[in-house]
Image (cartoon, rainbow, N blue to C red; front, side, top):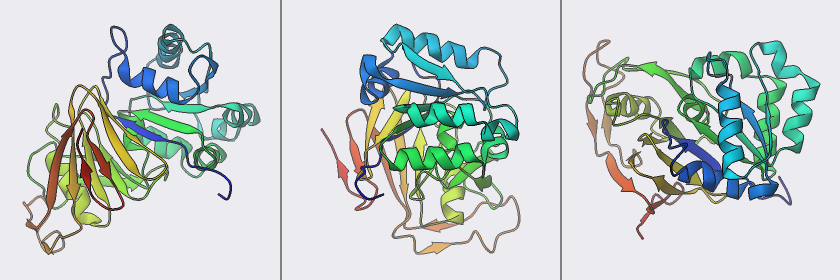
Length: 267
């Protein structure tokens, strides 16, 4: 939008440190205004009662006193005027973990989803952890096989929130052996860059599309720009596929990656 700089987009790999040294959540809170931040927390992905309040308490300990829970449990909730008003006042929006299919089926195409995209375009920062991270891009990994080898049918894709179309995100990455399904996702749509995020790790993507790694783990970047061959369209269901000339990076704390130029910058 004219006159606005896009807000940060922050996918978190799940299981982020919340008590002893909540570096990722603290950095997000600081981006949103620190003690003056106003956060809207959406626990839709989780069926656990108290998931939203848990993050309210964590952010209060960090120093953010103005946080509100938007308990969107049905599609009708995503049209509520009071929830839309809260999103219009927020300086940061945070979606918890759980099941990303709940996010796409309950929020997809609703007034809340449209407003989140508009607010991010206007400069409001957005973070999602685990399922909330998977939901961020236009193409969302909804499920699939946890294997190191890409396979035909090895990933289930669904429409995501659509804050960016440049990446596809997988989370709990090394802990759940998800390289195969991320490679499968990239094989289906070689325009996108695959981003696999370890637990207690996040990528802070700035308004220019440059991401920075924060946290104790690593991110795996799958760059298909020079992909010269994929057998995804010719293999029987469940069979391993060929992917030729993929570029892969493993990046840790402080490393940066430009999603437009595909360049890596180290500390």
